[in-house]
Each structure stands twice: as C-alpha cells, then as structure tokens.
Length: 133
Image (cartoon, rainbow, N blue to C red; front, top):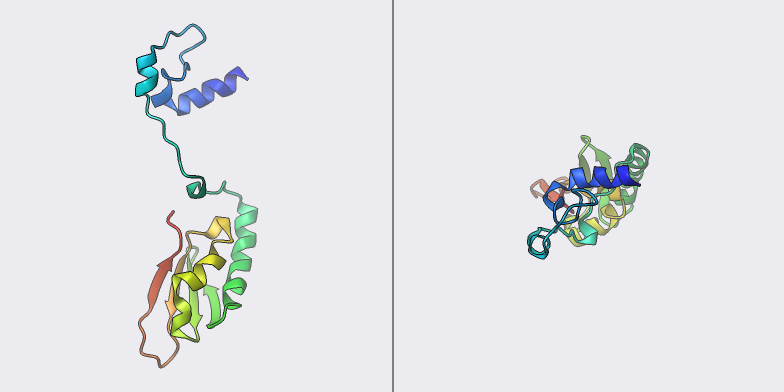
C-alpha cells in the first residue's frame, strides 16, 4: 500500500506537504493544511477512462442512433472527431434534439457534429459540440 501512496503523492505535489506525503514523521502545521489548494471536479465533468474497445463500439453505434432521430436523414463519420449529420428538417439540428443521444456514449460526448441542412433549403452548414473535451 505504501508505493501507491507515494505514487499519488508524487502526482499531487501541490498537496504534498498538506496531506502528509512527506513521510510518516513529517510535521505539518494546521496553517499549511488550510492553505493547501484542493481541486474538486464536478462529478459530471470527469472524462471517461480511455478504453479503445468501448470507443470502437460506440463509434459504430452512434451514427445509427443519431440517424434514428426524427428529422435526420443519415449520419456518418467524416473524421475521427466529426460526425456529419444530414438533416431532413432544419429544426432537427438543435442541441436539445441531438445532444441527449450523443451524450449516451461517454467516449464520444465531445464529438463535433457537422449539421448539413436539407438540400435546397438555403441553410448554412453548422457545427455543434454537446460537451467540451
């Protein structure tokens, strides 16, 4: 268990003194503990752990899930990070319509969506990203 504690202490060097990582005999003042910065991330903002198998599976599933939404003609990957969504209806390309489906795939939540307007609509191509990296 001690090597794990040392590894964690090495990675969290700003907290090194405040958490007692200097060793079993280290003396830490109460003032140092109070001044130590503690970063606490919100639970929903943690990136998922990288799993190539999961990402590959989600990459295969996401276009079909998006394509199944009302107002979407088809969806296909243009690049590793961009999913092109061809719309049948311009109103189908809003955040509230697309993002809940994209966010069901944790490894791809930050995917950029290229929204192609319906042919002949005169609408502009737009981009949407449901979650930041």
